[in-house]
Amino acid sequence: MSDTRAEIIIKGEIHTSNADLEEEREILVEGVDHLILEGQADEAEYSLTQQWYGWIMLIFQYLFARQIYLDHSILGDLADAQGAETEYTRETDLDILQNSHLLVQMFAVGLFFVILTYSLYVGIDGRVLQGSGWLFVSSLLPLLVLRVHESRRSEGGRDEMIAEQITEAAREGGRVVAVVGNEHAKNIPDYLSDDLPEPDVRPPKYPFLSIPSLKELLYPGFVFFSVLYIFYTVLLTYVQILHTPFT
Image 1 (cartoon, helix red, strand yellow):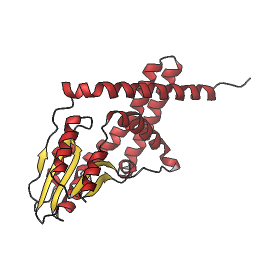
Image 2 (cartoon, rainbow, N blue to C red; image 1 turned 90 degrees about the vertical axis):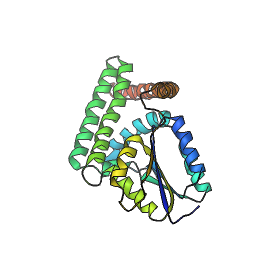
Image 3 (cartoon, one colour; image 1 turned 180 degrees about the vertical axis):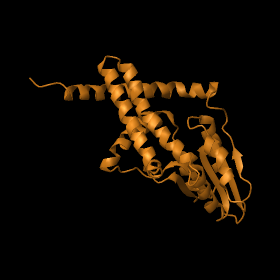
Image 4 (cartoon, helix red, strand yellow; image 1 turned 30 degrees about the vertical axis):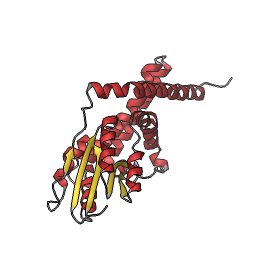
């Protein structure tokens, strides 16, 4: 579909919500010319000095996000079926690191190694379940530091960058649909160009801290903790082998 008049829909979602995904599907079935999805377009390639960040993303993305977050590939398929252009909010996950100040990067890497070391110490001390929890924290906290810095800086923050993507798409006309996390959805309209039509901002179907949300998290949460525990046990065994003297 195409139209010289732009229509902008910003759908805020909880990344684990089936109800939000169903609403997003309905929005796209109604028609779309340009789809903007929160996420990365390609897999990142980490340099030698970025391997610590690669470990963070391994723990967070592969052990956590892929177990907890819903697969949104159906949205891209619906957009492709209508000949719409699909765009992601990041080229790769490295954008988070590269958009951060050097001092913030240094703090994040230090935080990662301190918590990771403590995690292994706890596991070697026999508290394997607690150690696996600290392993997850070792990726979560540094990543939060980087993301909060990226989102809240005065210029070039993540919300502003997504708003620029929406603005460029809307100026081509047609129906622009942006699917992003709810915090982004609440802030993005403040950065949109004044000459654009008022966006239709749609909140999540229910809050993250709600009974429906918690019910949806039960099974994937169990899978996540199971995978994390197994991964941590293997990592701990490997570390213990390395530190066992040969006789």
